[in-house]
Image 1 (cartoon, rainbow, N blue to C red):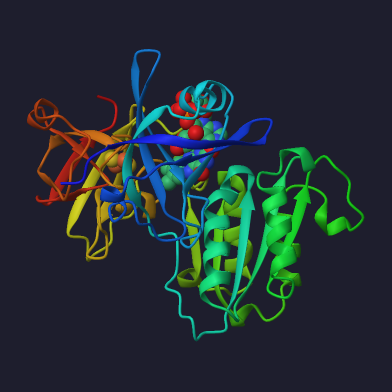
Image 2 (cartoon, protein in one colour):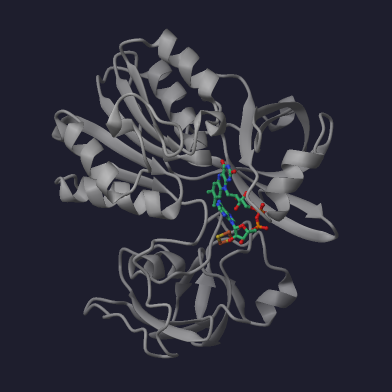
Length: 362
Ligand SMILES: Cc1cc2nc3c(=O)[nH]c(=O)nc-3n(C[C@H](O)[C@H](O)[C@H](O)COP(=O)(O)OP(=O)(O)OC[C@H]3O[C@@H](n4cnc5c(N)ncnc54)[C@H](O)[C@@H]3O)c2cc1C
Ligand code: FES
């Protein structure tokens, strides 16, 4: 069974005033366990001020870089991210769960493809891994990144991206969209909101010819980029999105809806009818043949259900079964007594009864 492994920090680099990157020493015996695919993330377990926290951070290294490195941006009031920025030193040991995630497409060294990414703030982390790996492993493919930040001082990996651009002159384009610094070209000023994303998408030549679009950043930015692409005719099968927090998708349930009022249509072919109680409201959705988990079915229906790792590791998606039955594929987060009390990890659970009622409030 996979576990959290203690890995010492080998190197700490200050990337911006509020972001650090951390590289880890991976002992020979764990090399296989920590082999990663571009765009994947690590889950950390660490005690901060007496509280055990589990958090995910995307790997920013390319698969051929020979290092395991992540980047952490401090969020205001954030327990782990502010701790990581202020208190960690080289030699400190963090407990790390091996790489997870499917924010990537299969690479083919013989293919000549175009890729486009929309990144905002720390959302550039998995994008950097994708870019470095793709440019190295598909020698005639190209990448364009549209990267939104407040100003030039807040751009994580600014120098690394500039060095990559110099190295891959014809194959990498990086466009910085800044909301507070004014740049010469108007398209590059402002926020990656819906209007800006529309403008950018309409300026991308031959959209049909782009192999995949990657999106990672704040929820509103991701929604804007996705909607702009879909409106321009890009199929969702070519759009890959990595969400860092559960504050999206923004098209979720009416926040002022009274309890039990937020209902969604349950499709005819649903295998089970799920009710999720969250913040005192009850949301209903169907679990269909294509759904991999209760969490995934809820998200597909627009329910704002909490998550982080989606790998059964962090416990962020924990809920209690009030009615019906569910089975978990894996569980690395819940203790035996929690399972006995009816708790499940919704990212790993599939219904085993026609009706399943779960509560995220207990
Ligand atoms: C798959 C995945 C990959 C991730 N990769 C990265 C990464 O590469 N770099 C990185 O910096 N973070 C990344 N995150 C986010 C990270 O896991 C934490 O959620 C984030 O660092 C906040 O943790 P915290 O303990 O500091 O904040 P908490 O103490 O959990 O939260 C404090 C406050 O901050 C808000 N908050 C939580 N997360 C965010 C956020 N991302 N943006 C703005 N406000 C937030 C909360 O709503 C709360 O109000 C990733 C998350 C996931 C699920
Ligand atoms: S989201 Fe981490 S265990 Fe489910």
